[in-house]
Length: 294
Image (cartoon, rainbow, N blue to C red):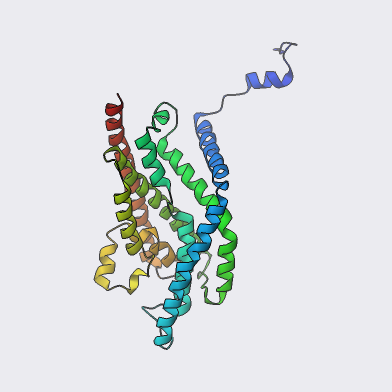
């Protein structure tokens, strides 16, 4: 019978003969650590998150007053199948979805890492830069919601008589699934856009152009179904409606049945396409980066 040497303490003996962690366990532990560090770093800027949330209510309140005036001029009639309560719910939900999925400074930071040569360290370490940035994106969204939850809940409670609840729990569950895919689509798209830093010195122009298209075509300014039908249908050939309008429509019950299943499949395909584009841009960019860096 094997006995451990007496000079080895039991705890030390257990550490020696403990099975080595599997590679997938090491990988998960590594990226969990990145998320934890990201949350700790973001909490140092919690006042900035709070100020951003509070000032973000100003355009929202202005938009609600505009729509209130529109409905009052129409004697309370519906606008494009939206009652006033549904319209208020649309903008409140848009604020929540945007808080959960929006990419704030990740694309700028990725572009800065490329221009400053900071990605060299990731090429020498057993860590995937895309998943590393995704973990930081998740930590940023978690921190933002931790700070913004209280004022956001207070604002929703103040307008609770206008807030529409989902039809049932399955609808709410599909809404959450769509929100997760929206966040991934937002991140992968921004990541692919930031990869332009491998070829151009300044990516801000491209980022602002993308943001302008997204703001108009994703439903931030108004629900897309109030547009003429040909324009609305044309927008569905782009990924923009799936970055905000679609998950909100799922919550409000505007998309149901076969149309809902089709929309979720298309949204998943856009996520895969954005991921493939991000990987392709990274692989091509790294070749150029390695050639320049020697």
